[in-house]
Image 1 (cartoon, rainbow, N blue to C red):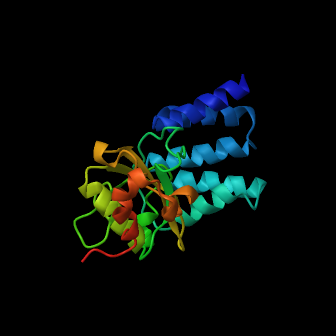
Image 2 (tube, helix red, strand yellow):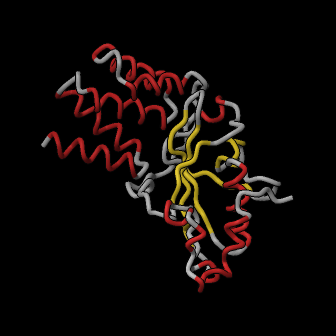
Image 3 (cartoon, one colour):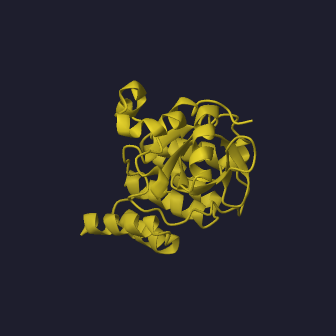
Length: 229
């Protein structure tokens, strides 16, 4: 019964039903006040509902039980940058969000990262936008706040793919004061690029072994690392 209730708490959180998740975790903690996982979920639910005081209090309860709990430590670090009443605005997160597919997905560390007080308001699984209007691709939050930039070689490649008709979605993978990682997924591949993966694999890197019938696509790879002017 307890395991079923815990799973329901996780499911409600994944769906973004934070009030339901809050109630379930409170019920679990009545049975076991030292349930660290329930306390962490409770802290997350409070933060999503804008009650940072109770969110921090719940995380501190975790640290009294487990002083080195990484989830609670990271949460408290992140919430330092939030003001009272602010909401993280995380949408529903599908368990399939970070499912990796060779050639279609990639985890990337951003460069020229933006202000941490903005990044701190985001959570793993939050959708981001790719701004291709400038010379290089910038990564923005859904409400248009600057998060960081893709490395130059990847910017050049994705700009070409997007201009040719491919479509992509980006999600926050992880973030702290020193590094921001995002997860990019190809959501649509145009027919003209049917044989061109969005992200190279070890096999793709050995371009000199490209079969003769694909030689006409070789130019795409040869200049993928060059910046567009």
